[in-house]
Image (cartoon, rainbow, N blue to C red; front, side):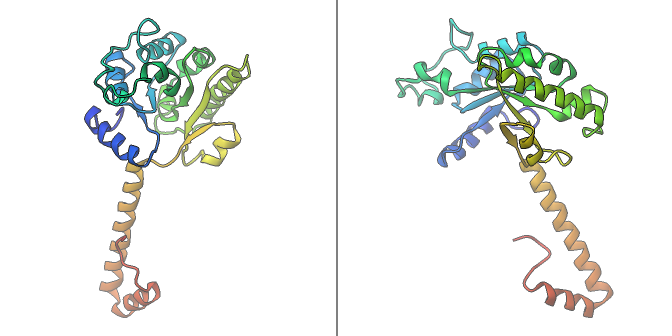
Amino acid sequence: MEHGPGGISDALHCLRALGATRTPAILRLPDSCPTWAKKALDLGPQGIMFPMIESAKSARKAVSYCRFPPQGIRGSAHTVVRASDYGIDDGYLTNYGEELLIMCQVESEEGVKKVEEIAAVDGVDCIQMGPLDLSASLGYLWDPGNKKVRQMMREAEKGVLGSMKKDGGGAYLAGFAMPFDPPEELGHRGYHMVSGAVDVGMFRSAAVEDVRRFKLSLVAGSSDDEEGERRRDADGDEKYWSE
């Protein structure tokens, strides 16, 4: 919900679709505030992601938004919301805290400086690195693969991984695969969870490729019918559009 046009109602449809295949769902909030967290959590996702966490204080606030009083400040309507099966799940209040994955996005220079403190906050299960916003905060909006951005990412990664070695606590490390930083590289550096392709990007790439193939078919057909026929024979049943 952070960058896309969707809101709570759209998220509900997604959760229903994912639930049909027993696929865990994580909702990323547009803002780290109690109002958005309350509405998202009432839908019953398996995880929730808070954007732009820059200190242990903001991480503790994020966790408090996920906990009912006295442990937190989450508003309660647990007898009628989807998260508790509309009140049918008698064990919801007992188990919800352990079953929910709480993720904090570290995506700024200030956040990287405090990443170990953020990772050590009780209740924070996972630190999600945000390479694009991090590059922007460092002055490299158009160059997320810049050497200085990579160095800052490595510092953050070491901080999170180091937090796990202290007293068995800390948080897991998660991140986004990028063209200059593929999934296998993230795995080698110790990431526990990697986000791969983005649905909008996949659709865009497929559409651009279809347009490219369509233009090539027009050029081949108008300039040389015989050559165009030869190409079609070589491709077999393949058409300019994806089926």
